[in-house]
Amino acid sequence: MKGVLPLLTAISIVSGCSNQPSVTGANGEKYLIDNKTYRSPNFSSRPRSLVIHYTVENFATAINDRFLTSGVVAVHYLIPDPTEASYKEQGFTSLRIFNLVDEDQGAWHAGASAWENRVKLNDSSIAVDLVNLASENNGTFTFPPFNDEQIEATIALCKDILKRYPDIQPTQVVGHGDISLDRKSDPGAAFPWKKLYDNGVGAWFDESTKEKYVSLFRENGIPSNDDIVKKLSAYGYGIEILPGGGYAFKQFITTGSGENIKSDPAALSKTIRVFQLHFRQQKYDGVIDIETAAILYALVEKYFPGKL
Ligand SMILES: [Zn+2]
Image (tube, rainbow, N blue to C red; front, side):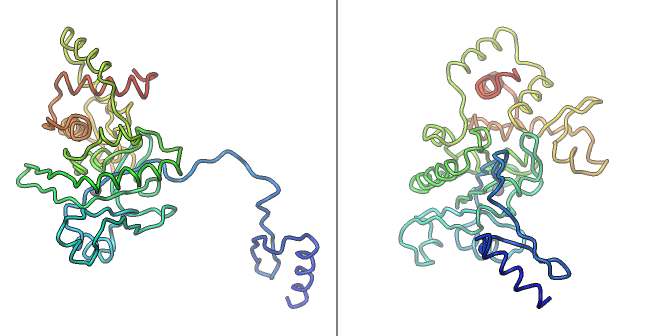
């Protein structure tokens, strides 16, 4: 081995590539990794979605009990509410954004999840979590408003992320509820998705297209449940029609055991509820009405015209 090293050093000097990476074989042979001669343009960046959460807990609890110590949960960015007591108690006098995990690492934030043709989104998404004390009491949710400055910081951060990852499309900016249909509601009915859209972040429907569908459905009735599910799926929601009829969540169809691939009677209403939490925040009871259906069809017409 000692005899080999001077020779390789000599080669490196001759080729002028002393900084080139290499690997060493079992017998000490060094293999250069040539990352300059041939480069392919056919690749995409790892993040393919941007997922918004709320913490449910105050800043200090979220940081100390969950993100730093729980061993199971993390997000890339945490955005405090600058007026929240536990944040001020940490000694922070102005709003700052905390980066907890590097963007090129997969943070453990999504759990069982699906969007478009992907499941288990931890590996392919960037997570932004906002401190917000939303709560649930026997199925009734309370969604307190987000702090204005916190939303301004969220918009600025998301714009910066989307600039760096142009592969993330507007419809791939989603809430945790959108991707974990069976168990999540965040960021909830108080999150200003329309304001984000007006600032270039995420998707929203065109009012005139929605009105067109409202008229159509008033005249002809609301489309069938199967048609609604096809449109939800076309937009990205992880719900599918089973071959034998009925609906199930995609993350269970793709990754679950056989017993999970049963029709779930609540799958549609749960999906409609999170859709309403995102796009129709005045009513999120999971019941399809003309307005909800019209918004869904307007979104598909705008972003996936081939799937109408
Ligand atoms: Zn969440």
